[in-house]
Length: 252
Ligand code: ATP
Ligand code: BTN
Image (cartoon, rainbow, N blue to C red):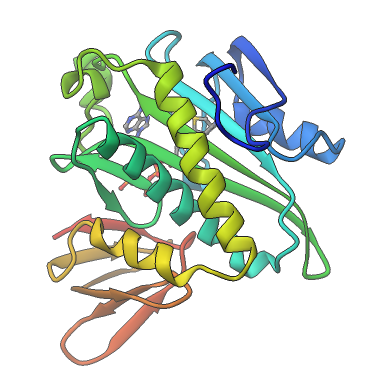
């Protein structure tokens, strides 16, 4: 707290030694209107979640697991952009510590092509109005158990393999500072600049990728991101757009 240079992110919060999911807890608190920027963090999670109900491996003491409660008065359709902003903020914080990262659209951070962190944004809305948004982040800090790692759908890594002396506290503080700035701009309608910064770190740009939806697979070149943050794929004949939240992305 004394080091935290934010205006409000992380000024209120609770810490859990072990919890099911910080996102679940944050949603519960958001429904009860805790202050904006409320931070739920945990040393370990027993039911950490990724997208599509997949599980996020969160062993005690091995990572940074936290969720933020936000009340943006923006239409729900714009809120998937929070995932992009959080990814960018985390990328910038890690770059500041001296490690190069790429962002696997929409929600994963890669170091040397291996997943080091993931973001899960969940929202509640009613009649096109946002009630709350919860942005949850999981970062692998300590090297992962080899057996666990090999069970993942995508190659994984941990921050200490690249930055042995990293401090969780200061990484969290740096993330909160960057994210608060991006979030404030976003609420003022300034998303374009963040998108430009995000694109600089976009993994697989110009490369052939595979898009996995619930029932289909598409192959094409990752061409660009739309101004709304959607993914644009060119398969030689047609250009297709995908919204965050509906697909998984793979390098072909
Ligand atoms: P992917 O390309 O991995 O499918 P995704 O964004 O489609 O990415 P997510 O739901 O974001 O999938 O991530 C959850 C997946 O990540 C899990 O199915 C698992 O394979 C993998 N995973 C779970 N825990 C971790 C972890 N701590 N670090 C890295 N990967 C993990
Ligand atoms: C993903 O890659 O699918 C996103 C993983 C998000 C994991 C974090 S850990 C803190 C928060 N609580 C959860 O249950 N999930 C997010």
